Length: 417
Image 1 (spheres, one colour):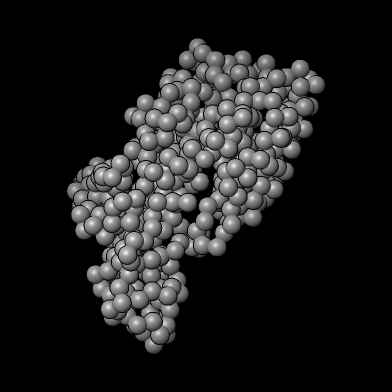
Image 2 (cartoon, helix red, strand yellow):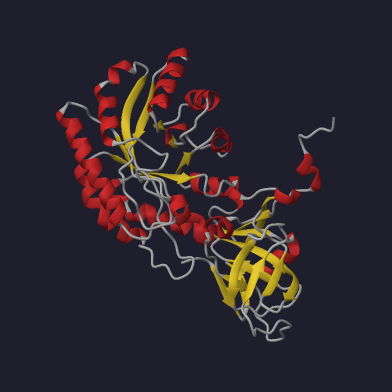
């Protein structure tokens, strides 16, 4: 469930009409519902209450500081993947011991900064990274807690670009490599190997891939236990899917009921890394219709937002529902043909939706639904276009939580020689 709904033919975010937000803040505009964010976080927390897990929100999904702070204030930790995300974590005062740090390509600077901040643990993705963190910890005269990312060779039903637990991906290490690291752990004198991490992919709508991966971890943990090796943490990652179109994803409660028995048997402190599940349906992208173009073969609704604002349709072929912000019977663009909703970017792949049944007129606002996850965080300045503004609706008020970029912002840091 989410807090975007129609009242008398007008789309609302909580108790505020979206059209009024578009007029006040301009378009393109991302609008987030704090109520939906909190509600979805609470559902995860309640579903896994019996295990009292550490829930680390995946910052890469939507790294707006106000969104992150909303969750940190309610006890969430953060799953980060870069020095920039660590910087954001510090700005929202996330406790260091609630931060886990993944990424296959951590730089020396990023590793040192995270060690200095005292994060809970690094998720290590390769042998060279393991050696690098050990060497840097030695230079800093400290010991660092790490978890090893296990690639369980599980391939869920999702887009190939967001499968992360299959054999051919760049993520994690196989079981034999992990066992050898544990057996040679004393050679990493400045590391404490305290956990195992898995993450099988994103937008996963069924529990089978998780169960398959967790069963493999259980076997591995049992083998290590026989060697006298004990662990503290089992990070099961994130990836729970949401509804974009006709998907029927598992609820947090259903997912928990499936995996809890196995997690109890493994008996380690569980870490969860939800992202899309929390914010995906908590945000929309509002865009304005600029032109209506009717050709002999196709109709196009040309809007002021494009792949630079929301790249998922172009990159993944992802589907987002698109609805008029205000439903009106006086239409200029009668629907004898389905229309593509396209943006201003000079690329044929610049579209937000194809073959849509939309009757609109120039100047109307459209809402691209389920745009809270992997939307603004993946946006760019391609074609020298300023990035969109972001608004958070909270307690009956709308707050501008990121101002729209200006042309001056576009060239900040550049120089002419």
